[in-house]
Length: 381
Image 1 (cartoon, rainbow, N blue to C red):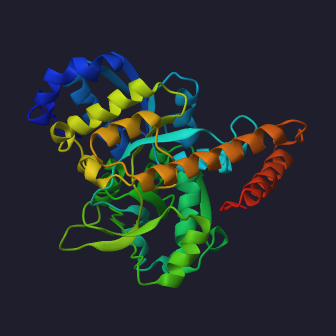
Image 2 (tube, helix red, strand yellow):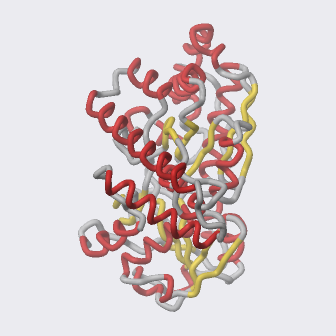
């Protein structure tokens, strides 16, 4: 559940300024997000509520349990924005589910992302008796078909304890919600989640309970193993969410910004500028509307992450005085990286093997060769 908020303060001030940019925002928009009850879905609804209150814009949030399901409507221009996780990065890189014939590297662009008091990492059923990541050996690992963000992410995180998927029993599910039901029903023991998701709170109140095994930043070797598989994870100190997390009882674990509001490079700069500006200027009105929404603050945005920002968002950031020359240089390099991969995909797709497995394997080699030739990190090999 999320709390209903009213348009006050900065939001009321925005009402006066609506003619300056509000007309660039469509009166009806579709956004996509994780399943109903996820923190990304709840934050999207809270923001959409203020768009309705302040700008008169109706935002319809479409839930989907996997990355390809959330991104497909945006790719097809049936949705303007998606609240993605790290699938935004996988899509850019053209790997995992996005390394198939129907996808390839995508020209993804960031808008804004939430960085709050929560962690985004390994969650384990408390009744398993697990205390550390290494204790997961022999346990059941949750895998969501079509969601590399959840599946590859959790495989990267168990590497902290020196484990691989071969040390556990992978259990496949069709969606994020189905996986959580599996944990509650004792079909799986560990999975990847945000500590503030509705599902993690539900599991916490179930007979099994939930806990988050520590991943201390001081364990350099453990983190090195994680970063070989997933360089986007960073050590955080989670102070809110399920499992009894609080400022008094924090847990050092993994995290990255989530949800990641993203779109495609070819979307109207005027529209994305207006949406970004509205998200910034209505922040005070929606920050209490859902757990984690306070992480959308402009001051918390990472301007030099692994995916480039949209030109419209950059315009809004420049107006707010936060965009820097170093951020622009970093962004330009990320755009070049995307173009290298997109060009490599176009070249490879011509005359590529008809067999799906051979196609995917061949693409990874072609991708790696193109990035190496350009002097860029391959990351996924």
